[in-house]
Image 1 (cartoon, rainbow, N blue to C red):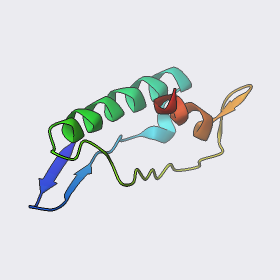
Image 2 (image 1 turned 90 degrees about the vertical axis):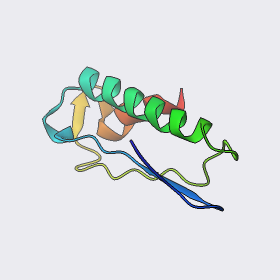
Image 3 (image 1 turned 45 degrees about the horizontal axis):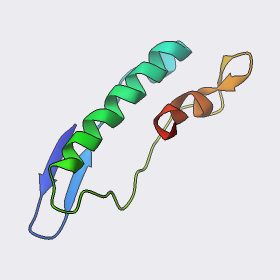
Image 4 (image 1 turned 30 degrees about the vertical axis):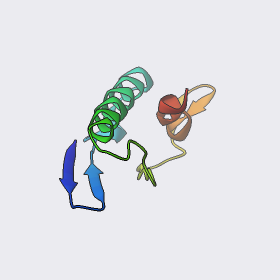
Length: 79
């Protein structure tokens, strides 16, 4: 992830390439790794709390497994 700081605010950005080509397990693992990286960046700040987390997921409701679509798979970070 990338971290840009100012005296009052910080912006961290991360992306996962080729999401539409991944199976559910790979996407789940990559999302967990990416959020761990983001949280590590946030922990280094004085505030320690994100104001907003925003995801863009291509074909968000594309099926990944019989009972889960891409949106449900990327929700791993909320567990």
